[in-house]
Length: 51
Image 1: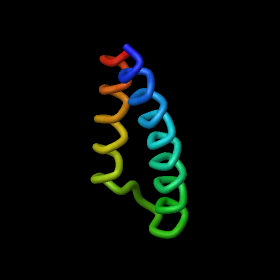
Image 2: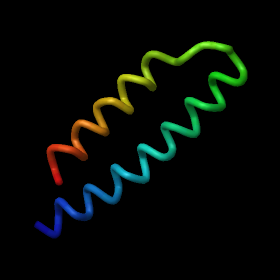
Image 3: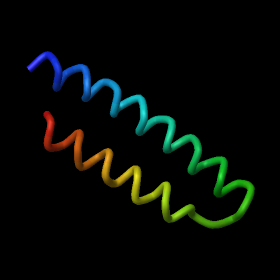
Image 4: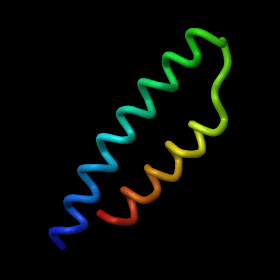
C-alpha cells in the first residue's frame, strides 16, 4: 500500500511536469504535442487505477 502511495505521488508530480511542458509547447508551436498528450493520459489513467 505504501508503494502505491509513493508511486501515486511521483505520478502526480509527473502529470504537473507534463502539463507545464504541454503549455510551453503550445505557446511555441501553436499546436498540441500528441506524444505528450498520450503520456499525460496514460499517467492519469495509472493514477486513477492505483488510487
